Amino acid sequence: MELLIDCDPGIDDAIAIAYLAGEQQVGRVSLTAVTTVRGNLDASTSGRNAAFVLDRLGLQHVPVLRGAADPLTPLATQVDAEAFHGPDGLGGCHDHAHPDRSESDTPLAVLRALLRAVETGHTLLATGPLTNVALALRAAPELASSPNRIVVMGGAFGSPGGNITPTAEYNFHLDGLAAAEVATSGAPITLIPLDVTERVLISHADLAGLPESPVGHLVRRLLEASIHIHQREMGISGCIMHDALAAAVSVDPTLVGCTPGYLHVVPDGDDRGRCELAPDTEGPVDVALDVDVERARSVILESLSRL
Ligand code: RIB
Ligand code: CA
Image 1: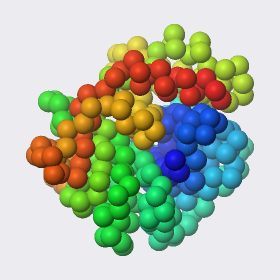
Image 2: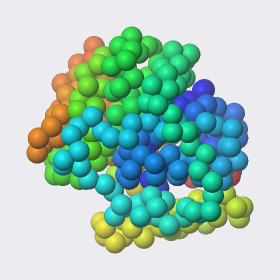
Image 3: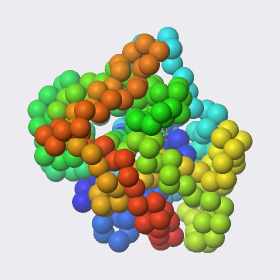
Image 4: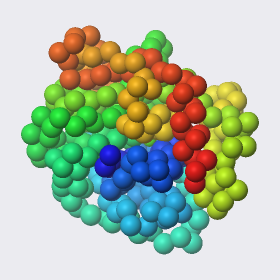
């Protein structure tokens, strides 16, 4: 399965990319391109971190295209997730001496990459704010009629379900307007919200299975940093695999149980990013509200153990 990931590395985005690299080693995935977006930190950090992680994974041939520098949602009320990912976005694991090969292409080049990927049957996985995806849909509305599902990590339906406001998840809050446009575009989306991601954690004990390789050491450092941050910020003893779960669902949709329907996202205001689902078997959005936690943890750890 050929796949393009649009992301905002961030530690959990980096783990999702590492998971995909492990899947690529056994031929289940071919990672064809990475596009990046402003999210956890600024757009240049996202691009630099994606390129760094890919290079360390031996995926120097995978292009990294930096996309939108700013969300569609007005910046006045923007946030960042430095508290959860550290100033370098990778929990202190970035090597500042590593050359940044990410291409600061025009957003149009990113859109073309996204469009070409979906038009040619690739799976599109989005693990950051949906700015690039929304811009691609604006440029080519026909993207929404592609049969290829777009797997999106974002949103929350619990109460209170949010992780950046009581009702909103970070990706959907940072660019509420983009999330709202993508949600109602008619595109076939599989949505992986906090309701399932917050149930899939990696603990210190799980790190024993990581390989004693240079890549294994990098993944271990990323996870150790994330576990430390989760303990400090949330008081939990493990790190949440938001993006790695979305990546794993891209490979094996049976990991989650979905409810089909029509999705509405509040585009702006105090409630920006809040989600509402109108269940309907005809709806284009499948929202994952159940997950096989142990199987999801197992497939993520198994893939990381191959690196
Ligand atoms: O709310 C979690 C999501 O926001 C994850 O994708 C994380 O990387 C951040 O982008
Ligand atoms: Ca992310």
